Amino acid sequence: MTALLVALGAAAGAALRFEVASRYDGRFPVGTLAVNVSGSFLLGLLSALALGQHPLALLGTGFCGGFTTYSAFAVQTHGLGRLRATAYAVATIGGALVACALGFTIGQA
Image 1 (cartoon, one colour):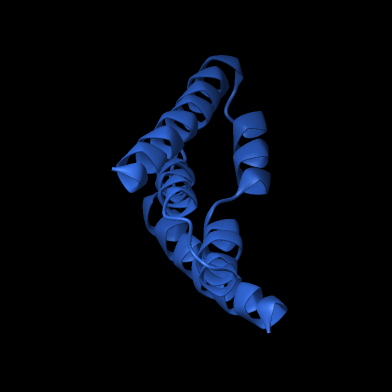
Image 2 (image 1 turned 180 degrees about the vertical axis):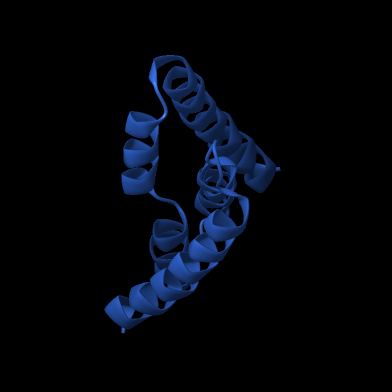
């Protein structure tokens, strides 16, 4: 049952990520940046809410795992050139960490 929930969540997350990235990624991958930061926020929030095994499998592991993307981030960073790649990496990693902490803090309140 848990594996099915993860698969369902991942399918929905990946489809939404594809839509956002397709619409907003251009010369600078704004869409991928947005999904990674917002997905980190959501995962922090879900972690703080201490959901049961099945909701966390569906939403945390499945949806957030499918929605966020390290592979696209890595490929896009490599293709941006030194200065833009550095800015993108700092924005993605820093933004994701801050967003996750914020989500966790809000979830605990």
